[in-house]
Length: 311
View (cartoon, rainbow, N blue to C red):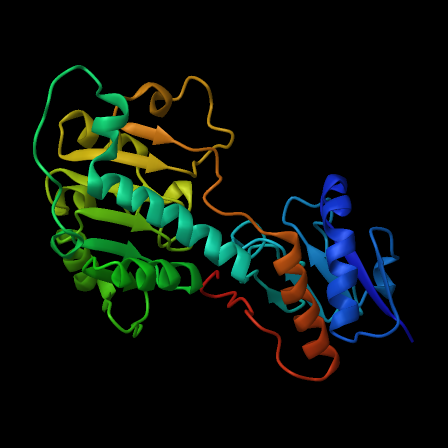
């Protein structure tokens, strides 16, 4: 019996993903399969899924062996009580490398003080070189696949990197902390702070007024993780009083960011339109194909979501 694989995402994504998925499925040796956006629910074996898909009720998918998310974030679907099938989040090399490049670029921008030279051409000859990387502590909150990759890259460049996660991790060359006390220690040294923790009820407003006050004066914040990790009013207050020097924000509670939001006009905020990293169809297809191969071989799926933790 052929495998029936439902592509459940917005229609415009079909043209982007169909060819890479078919190539990856053939390479993985899946054999006879049907890949379509239109398969009766009771016949579906696997769902290649985007959380903004029209598919929101998983009850009819009684034969489905796995829901394979195209996004790294799963907070929009973990609370769906009809989703009882195994759920795998997206962890792929393209997503990871894109995040590493974006985070490294903005970290170096802050470290080198590039904005002063890009936007401060006022005829004043200001001498003074930036410190070396070894004298610029960076903290990364979140040591999953993306956080770990960013931490390893920045440590390789010579930055003293502290990583914090909910459960204790071990990353060579990185000071790894966990727990509430560990979070305060991680924040206290963060001249540059990168937010890559998943969004859960426990991490909402993780960066509140108290967290901001714990950071060194003149610190920088980079958020490519999730918008609700930051208490927006608290951040704006600390930007206004100078305790936080600047923030680069790629994610927001409401997206697109409303045109009247104070972040747009704030001189100490850089807004980027959720471009830090994105799922690349070619590399994501390989992850999807491998998970289907594993499912058919009776092997555990990769990157399964813990419903209790929310990621």
